[in-house]
Image (cartoon, rainbow, N blue to C red; front, top):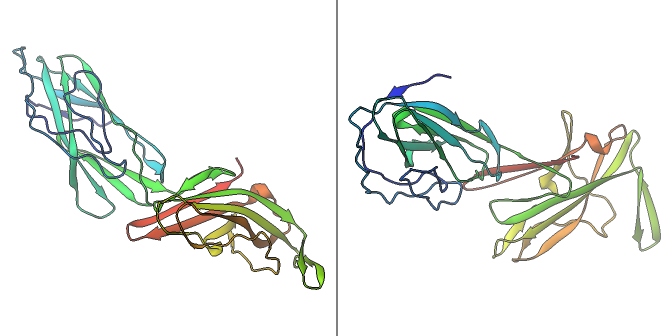
Length: 292
């Protein structure tokens, strides 16, 4: 690991770090109350205790434990370990900056640790999350260190739920493969066979609007089946009973049912991945369901 030694004296505390942060004992940083995606605001101007030792403190980055990749809406946290390799007690402080994608860096808070000579202290963040597919870069000013995190698609098993940034909870429950399907029409029961070399795949999907106001739940075409390097889009079939229907719904409304696909007959359920993605003015999100 590359290390950089910095000499710092006592200084003024500013705030806790992004997403609501905490530190271990003997830290003067306070916990922010951010939403897990943007970061807490500083409330600053606390005075540091004076050092009683006569030597000079010198601080070194021992480790920065921060993920390189996280899934959207997945909780994560990080920690930084700082050693005082000087002859005197001191207060380590660094301003922390963050940026999303190609935007400019903005200050999100500070880290502050009181570290006696010859000891090591750790600053641990609270759990946070990233809502959208993007990159986020953090810069620790006094350490001259940057770290980039890539937010990627959420990966879930059948039956697990994902809540998008709009407050819509979506669940892919299962996939059933069939050679034929039947439906009731005005002239009785009709049976439809899949095309030669193909089979039907019926996805059981559910979406609930938990936003508190009218919102759009995913349309049928928003979900695709993936197998290897191939994508399969939903197909309209004559059967209507029990079908899933997306669209605008009031708060608290659930839409559920099946979505049909026609896929090669040599595929099985373990080969299939359900992909759902969406976007708004703030960014894009994505989730994939598959067998555990």
